[in-house]
Image (cartoon, rainbow, N blue to C red; front, side, top):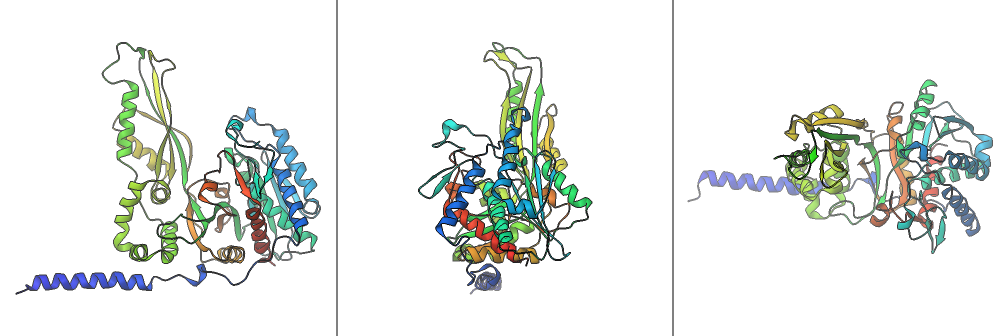
Length: 487
């Protein structure tokens, strides 16, 4: 005879399974993230116009606006040349928009609108990271166009989005279009080295009492193979970014000849501390941005993953364990990460170093701060003599909402250009100039308006950076659609 306890267990199990299945069946795609029947018109009316536009893009790419952390290596003449090239290629912007300069390389254009409503800011940066030309298949600054692909540093990060902005504004000015609100074009030339241009622009706007209803900068893109169980392309819009922290773990001692080392050298002590840090990662958290991403994209996943994401209350611990084991982007979305990137000791094989250090790069989830992260490192390192020196620091940015008019206009513009994508928020793992604008706006979004394959995403800051002509023309179309949302 079946006991009452067993019957109760079976009933509870059946109820549990039914709850999971009902939640999964109700976990359907949202209309706001699905396809759109409105299709954007081509950015240009003829092949000749397209070719002329691509030639302008190539001209911007050929200017070697390379940023170096060692500022003595920066050729500021190239940055002046870029500014002059913009003026030559886009005369209507310079004739009709108020231009001001800020910081070392910041350029700000104000396109006056018809009303006094809150303005918008379209951002980009025109500096690029250095190049090791020996590792490139083609000259990195020749902007070679071959078989529908443009090869050059800056195509993806991020002269491409700058090009999309200025092409769209120049065309609208040529058509006599006047936006309903002021539109600011904010371009910095030192984003790659966390320069003063974007912060200076923010302080200038703040001083004028300007509170933008939308700030749009680089960030997510149109991507595939980014989410488990999903084979449909996604348009990921960053609603926040992780913080940043560089620290150096340091030990000092007497040093000496390597023939008679002590029982524990400085290097082995640091290595042991690094292992302890690795074994004690930061706690995982599903932040609002990540939870919304999971609940948005999870609705389009296959049944197994829909079951999981529809019931995060049950499977969240399992996902945290799985993501921790896998590492990579999914793990970085749910915890503060630690990447050992530098090690220094002796300059000679036969000399014990008098000092040794290990450099760590941390990307801070919003649940952690610079102070709490440093405290965690000191606590788990297990060596009281280790000095934790902070080199560069900033906390995570605030999150922007998705229930706003700004989000709706960006989302609608995406769906008019890329009709088969799913629009979703996400947490940006890298950093951008947009973080500074959180001081004056609650609606700071991060979206690089281009289609990027997994291979192309790997080319950002890498060798053989390139973009297809089709993709960059779609970038222009996106900004055209977005600007008309403010008419």
